[in-house]
Image (cartoon, rainbow, N blue to C red; front, side):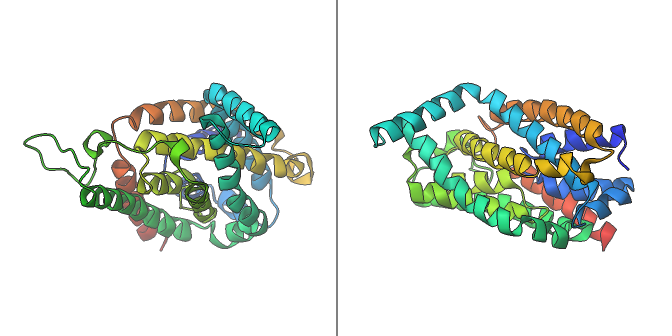
Amino acid sequence: MLSYFQAIIIGILQGITELFPVSSLGHGVLFPALFGWHNLVAAQTAKESFFLAFLVGLHVGTAVALLVYYRKQWVEIAGGAISSVRERKIHDGPQRLAWLLVLATIPVGVVGLVFEHKLRVLFAKPLAAAIFLTINGFLLLGGELIRRRTLANGGRLRAPKGRHSSAALSDAEAGGMRKIESLSFGKGILIGSTQILALFAGISRSGMTMTAGISEGLDHEDAARFSFLLATPVILLAGLYKLPDLFGPNGNGVRMQCLVGAIAAGISAYAAVKFLVKWFETKTLWPFGIYCIILGLICIIRFA
């Protein structure tokens, strides 16, 4: 049904690609198909299956890794939410960030409850995932180009002397950027709503929120941090919501594999977020966009 080797590989893949802007769902469909694990590919589009129960553990493992990495900030956010409710006003950064996260999570939560399973059944197929992964790559590159044009029109580019600014514009070249806490609630909801696109296998949750974030003036580091904070409650609640599947008939025969996969997902997710936080201090989404386009086109040819 599902070997421990498969559980570990898929767990590692989930933990990395959930945070890298390259679509965990898309890779979760494409890589089993490329490896010839056809039983897993078929199980993803079934209305009920052992694989959907297995994914519960992977989501929880990834969310726990994010909670551990951002544990200090989550304590501040929780304190801000409590104090804001008690005082009935918002007057500092943690309070504002708490409500930004709450409001920005609502759209994807509502849409996900209604359409997540239906969209998975329809589109969690190799060819569809390859097409959406290619689209994801173009969206990442488009976000960088829009950001560059917006900053150029505002006269905020700071290209080093003797060098022309490339499309992959670093934050140092972009000049002063806005902070997360300066986002209006409307902008926060808009950024959070882009997570809805990740219901299509191949479109990245983190990729869309990062792209929306930099388009709204955040630097790459803050866009990534806001993306990871947004993803944490969504991934965790999605896992907990599906928990009955794991302990019901669908979980028979995969519960231990689920535990092993969740540990693998958690470890790889922690390593991924640590790497990406460092990456986005100086670099852009450009390499991830190119990767998605190349892999997507290869897989379109393979599965067409």
